[in-house]
Image (tube, rainbow, N blue to C red; front, side, top):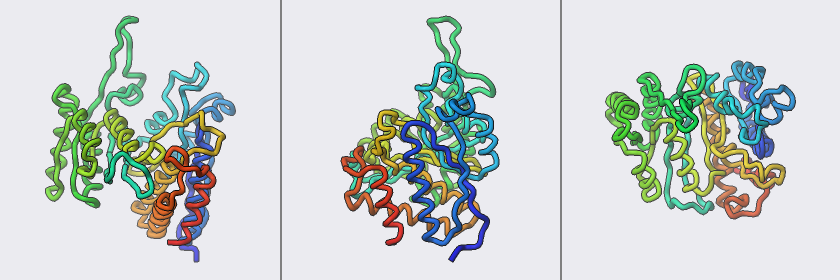
Length: 361
């Protein structure tokens, strides 16, 4: 029976490298899960970035893609490989950064947890890194216009870091809301001991927001100590909130500790739109070999479905997300895995195993 609601209309961006393979796998899993729980088929809206966009539009991030995304609530985005673009296209914003900036996707939510059947460095980990996505030290996000990196002389390079109360408060509040639905612990990560104005503002604003959530335990760590603690005692952490650069680095570390960057999922979102995008890159050497691990993008799509379910109070979408999460976990538990996890399954074989298990929950 089809649940009565407006049809889902989602963007589909294949990207570069292994992007087409893992995006196809993710789309197939979503379509199957929605059918199982009785939701009408998705209207997929294909959009271009990367090499395909350069070939067709002469731009790795065409204006028609950005305008198309403006009209969507959510989309799946494959990885990009801007390092391999022709030289004329390498100096602008990379596709992911251009989309985040244009659409105001200020939050990057990156979970990391160990799963049975996956060989992981961390024996027990279940945490979420909530990364501020719009400011910080990255040159594509620290200026209103232009780049925050510049060279006054050929031998001297400078970079601007941007930290504001508004953005720090916004990301902190999201982190505390997430923690309230989990184990009620938040760790603020910063480097205020050597950057007291910028990182100090971020830390202090996070603590101001913490005062609004007295039932949540709040602590803070310097980023270098946090990296060491993640390796030694990852199970001690629940929700980690941090600025842009540190969130990028720590989430890659956490992803690898959980077994592989091929497991590392993420959701980029604002209050009104969401983009499912795996943490890993385009892996061009694997492209076309049917060996890529689709778990990270499938798990990112699960986050997207939950985001839509929460926003629209749409219970069937939540059931679909739970079913996909179960099917992926059961597939890995059964020893079916791609080569990055020590397995022999191809991308399509792994995907078919997940699709089959969607019917067994």
